[in-house]
Image 1 (cartoon, helix red, strand yellow):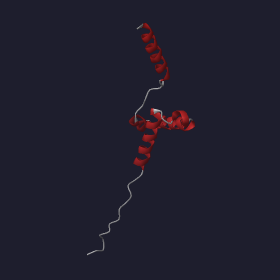
Image 2 (cartoon, one colour; image 1 turned 120 degrees about the vertical axis):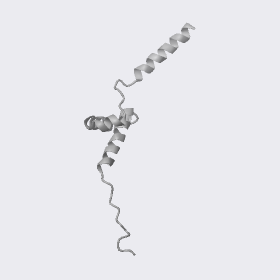
Image 3 (spheres, helix red, strand yellow; image 1 turned 90 degrees about the vertical axis):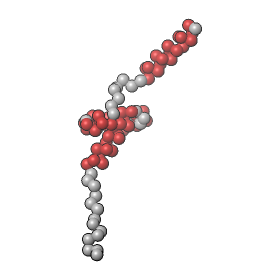
Image 4 (cartoon, rainbow, N blue to C red; image 1 turned 60 degrees about the vertical axis):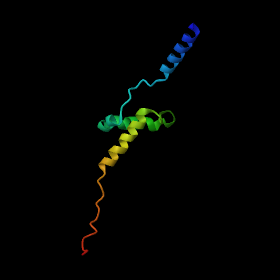
Amino acid sequence: MMKRLTVILLMASALSACKDSEPTHDVQYYLDHPKERAEKLAECENNPGEKAIATNCINAAQADLKAKSRSQEMPAIPDLTKGRR
């Protein structure tokens, strides 16, 4: 029983050491904070092998896509019924 408890405690401490120390921010946070979004994107692009699956990198990239799509206007749809009877 004691051996099993020791193994569980060692595994738990090893897994806790793997956790990121930076807080996780959602997409809305990065939409509201463009400076932090730009910094995070630069950090992620600088180290894509390690950061490609990091939650903050994914959220910052999603926020960047949303911000870019919001800044574009909808294309005008021509009125094809004009001149028709």
